Image 1 (spheres, protein in one colour):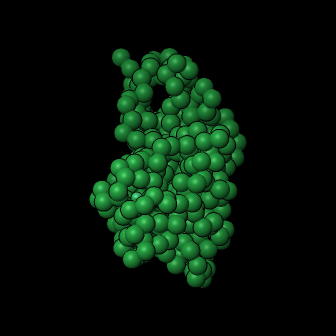
Image 2: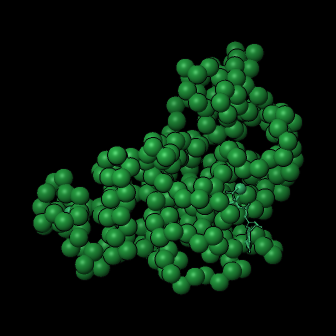
Length: 291
Ligand SMILES: Nc1nc2c(ncn2[C@@H]2O[C@H](COP(=O)(O)OP(=O)(O)OP(=O)(O)O)[C@@H](O)[C@H]2O)c(=O)[nH]1
Ligand SMILES: [Mg+2]
Ligand SMILES: [Zn+2]
């Protein structure tokens, strides 16, 4: 008989899972099963070894320094992409994060934290309507001086959500505001792992008051995509959609090809010019990654 559990966090060959009883349990995993991720549903044998990782519905991740996909968490219903006036996001950060989620079939939600600070009058803050036009929700909130979370708790009321974003935007502060018993959860976690203070050094799953789940991830300074084909990258630009069937060439990459319907649409504003420019930069970035 093996027990079902949900992975809370995993390191080189050890992890922590939460059993259906709510109890935390450490486990070992043999390399041949691959690395479990927070959000994975697993089975453990009585000795506390991982025996099965259930098939994943998706994985959220980023590119490592070699352009390889590095998964951070699995089985996500949405990714909260947190940005803030400080630290200021680079021009492509939001385009990359949104693409990373869409490409992997994860619903992106843009969270503008630190609403106590003035919203800068520059991209991406001035271009959020390009994202809402894609059906992507934008939520404004803050954690200081008092938490004002807006629709965030209601949005997270089911499934598994993930907090992503640059270091210092306030992901862990949001987690704190959303999970009243976070101190108890992290205390229980460090008792089973034997680790002391809990800084955000690895992706970790937490339970929300509703019973739903939220994964906090360590922030990176610059979020990079992984090496992929241009057709895959295009999944990050759903506004190209059916229009690209009108490109003269079937394998059009929408750069300088003659008869490109996407470029033409960006000139008339049917496709937001800022999104088209981001496409070109991300495609060029792919060439550098591929080297
Ligand atoms: N002004 C202001 N500061 C905030 C707000 N939310 C968080 N901060 C501050 O932002 C800083 C970074 O917050 P964290 O929650 O640690 O950020 P993080 O995204 O988890 O960072 P990493 O774990 O490094 O990825 C802290 O000094 C927080 O107090 C806010 O709404 N307004
Ligand atoms: Mg953090
Ligand atoms: Zn084209």
